[in-house]
Image (cartoon, rainbow, N blue to C red):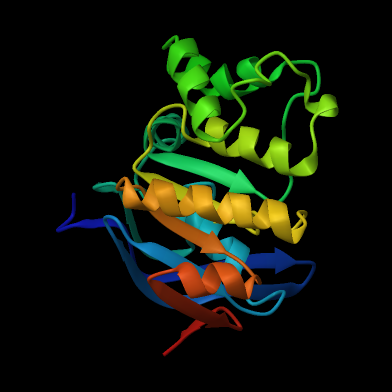
Length: 222
């Protein structure tokens, strides 16, 4: 798996056009995440954190440079190939929960497995037990608290057993008690071998990570 690296960025830049202006969102970033690492990415709003995570997660292609995820270089992948790579290798957790309101908890967690043509209802139940929601299988999202909805989102991100978990401000909408629950789940996942990269402003999460990457104006601060 690329010498123990699950994610490797080499001289990566990402530029956007905004009217007549070119925005240099990420500039010449080289960064590796080793198998089993727990990495925090921190920086001010607009520093390039989310763009960097989108590139790591194969949601966006770099303008320049090379990106390798789980042993595969993404530059030459087709869109279908990137979709497969995301589906099998990467779990995503966002500040917004993105649950489908008309599906119950079990159906929401099972949903990503439909795209890989695997029926994983049993695994979905196990994941919901793991995040403490075994008694909420048939509740709708609207019947849950914010902390419970984020735990459903975490269970959903793990349904295809990805080796990589990417999280963007996963505790941003939660109170301190629920944030602590989410952080404990992340620690358990990391101890089980999942590589985690989390974009966060939460110092408690940063303190629990094995490494912190600072980004400013699209560049990694050494």
